[in-house]
Length: 172
Length: 303
Image (cartoon, rainbow over all chains, first blue to last red):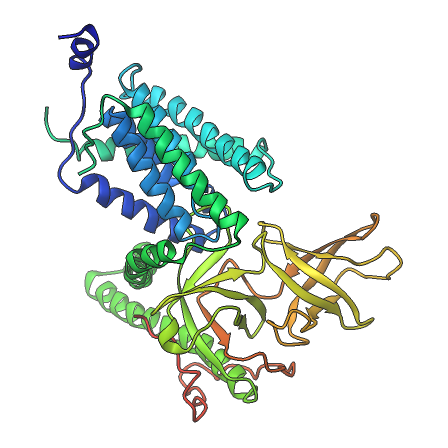
């Protein structure tokens, strides 16, 4: 057995109850649509992104992470007025990087979760800005105070909902 | 379900998935073609959940309001409190129904006072699932004769236009979306311009040269130039004017409450709508006026 394979055996991979990932992803998309409908400030929440980050960190399988990110992102694009692929690419990259990172850093402690989500939120927005500018030739500003607040708010929400999602894990 | 057997080469898979989506984007942008099938599937999957969610939220919200309102009611004794709560609960239900009836009565009165323009009432069942675009979903679709580019309004003003139509639902691009544009004019001077969305709650009026005398508080109405919105329909009110070259920077507050839409009207043709003040809603308890004989302005159903 190769050294890499041996090392991978020591990475704790969390398994979830059947349908949990798909169900939660759908729920996040539906709830996100309601948040955008019922309040403009609630629109700063990015529940589909939080769900992508959570499951990618937990599954720790880059292929699964990127597939989940791509599926959620494409669905998000499909029910928006944006060209399909914009959120798809951003979340694919988030899913891939998060799942690759899952085995290397502590993803269980609330403080580390807070900072991980902040980093991925900015990464996600940076990819969106880059795609808007380079591929779509649309003006897009990356940094704003709203972005800073939004990343902190999303990180706080993540700290609150991730423990609830932990209950969907199968006992190891 | 999502366990892939490609654990050995995830980076290759990443490249394939990202490149596929880049080509998908390029296909849409270069050929100006939409991938309708994907949007249709997504809408078919998500809109039933949104319909169910809307119904659940309105039910739970009603119950929650009743609960919150009643929770801190002081009681002198158990029997009186129980009686009071029962009556309050009943009262809240009646008030809620009355408020809904008032809203629908305004729509019906508006429809009745504009019989020249066929229109259809619809309920807002959801919004887009991203924070960038400003779109909503309504519970009317192809089966209700809804087509793309039909104007969507409320008695207060312009809301947006239909951009996607599905069998039982449709997507509306709100006028505050960045991709939105409405042909507009200032009624006093008949100066034409274009109202554009900013992605924020406010709008902006473009193409007004610095020589034009514009005043804050002035009403902006549709010009009808875009062949989507009927002429002389309220768009918004000017809130801020900044002199700039080559055009003034003019901010507008939309007439319609775009962040609190519950029922809207879809104009089935681009007939001109004469601007009239909608008659006041009937007093609670009195029956609302009836719909037109065509029955097109029926109250939007929950499902």
